[in-house]
Amino acid sequence: MSNMTKVIIGIVLPFLGTTLGSATVFFLKKEMNSKLQNLLRGFAAGVMVAASIWSLLIPAMEEAEAAGTNALFPVAGGLALGVGFLMLMDELLPHLHPGAKAAEGVPTAWRRSTLLTFAVTLHNIPEGMAVGLAFALVSGGEGFAGAAALAMGIGIQNFPEGAAVALPLRQGGWSRPRAFVGGMLSGAVEPVFGVLAALAAAGVDPLMPWLLSFAAGAMLYVVVEELIPEMSQGRHSNLGTVFFAVGFSVMMVLDVALG
Image 1 (cartoon, rainbow, N blue to C red):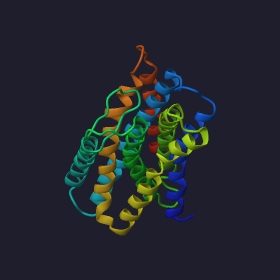
Image 2: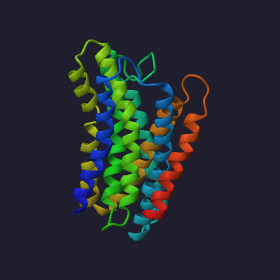
Image 3: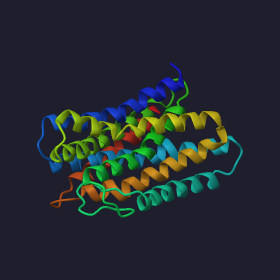
């Protein structure tokens, strides 16, 4: 199996999470249970933080050192660029986070459902990059387990995101099939950026440390800006925190022991 085939298989998993989340529009009238959302977000946040370290930053250092360059500049620089890119997009693109009342970014008269879709689509970009790059690093069978764990962790996070888009579309008057397709398409950017990142890394090897650390910085921004605040919404509960630790541990064990 070629590396590109593995990349394609890997990016299908997160897209499947969005699709399954969107499919809840056929069974639910309102939003998902808040405890289940907190559990899924906490687990996904733990997976993404661990993946940022073991699947992205450490490989970025190793790639830079293998190329005979100082790892500090491309890794720290790429990380800063990743955080800065998402911060800039948050400021420039109008969007509305699930559960929020006011939109962020440039003022606009766009409908709430459109703004929700923009928010999910924006934050799928670094996740798609991270999965594509993780699978691009797979050599033979080595590293496949860690890359697959990353894809599954992001797929779990995409489940509530798909529901967060599809259910408001349904409440806004869309038919169930149309709302399902709308929610599913909010995750379409993820496989696109996964393939683009993998192709960029394969075409220009010196870019790999920058791309890996860029994806790590962008993912960490999503975790701190989105997942951690959202998993603490509602009544005080340690559920999200507990499953953050579970997700972090699972990803760490898979990546270190099997990667």
